[in-house]
Image (cartoon, rainbow, N blue to C red):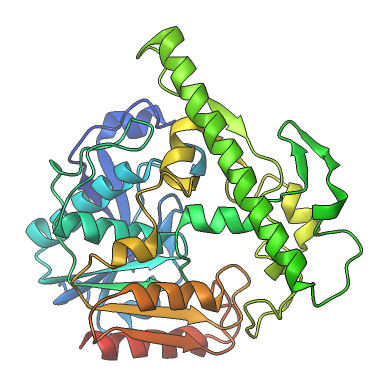
Length: 374
């Protein structure tokens, strides 16, 4: 039976959180599925993501069925990618882990970074073991050298990518000529023009360079806007919102021979041409500070492989071979970065990003995770 578990935050939510109720409560509401009613297991698996509401995460019940309590985390940015500052998400995870250890009495806490949670748990554990970050790149972040960050006992990367910034750079549409105009496009860089498959690899290299250049332009603009904001208003106006057109144009969405796997063409939101311009994909809306913290390759502190290199606990990397959002090279990058020899890379044949398909895909995968933990 799913229950809500309130966690007291170690710091108060700032003005970057939309809900006034959430700001006033000082609580993070997580969902817990117990293996045995009325008592806690020795180990708890904490499923987390920067902004997705994991109270109803698809793996909680299946995890508890294996004898391991499962908690779905919800950070202060639940349902709101627009304003995520990852340094604050790390502080929220610290509050949850402290609660699980000191209040609930769990002996071992395993952090499970699902999808965008992969880079977050790597960032968390690196800072828990050796804190170095004193603020977010654009300000508005928690000083992690002064935060309470109990280290986790192990990390599981579940259908995770290398980090939000790395992911968005690979998805940005370089055919967008003007940031305020989604319709004027550079035909030479248009992924959705009439192109033969498989895509010419030289063209793909040019495309990738143009994606990086577009990210650099947006990042430079965001830094300049923050500087001007400070000059005009001081601390009175700390941040501004903006939109980003064309955020779902990875060549791997149309050409499955790139980063080959068992996946079908397309995205997690259907056809790539449509998803690219719809406001449902990652990074379509942002703020200046959030861009620098979570989306800017040059600024983010949460690059998964970089953070994992500083982590001393065991790491398990799990990926579905039919995932349309996170590809095998992303899993491999995380696995290769982990320094411990007892790390493991676990492919799940036929599994999509959300383990679509027969229930056995998820239950068998979690059984392997449980065996690894034991």
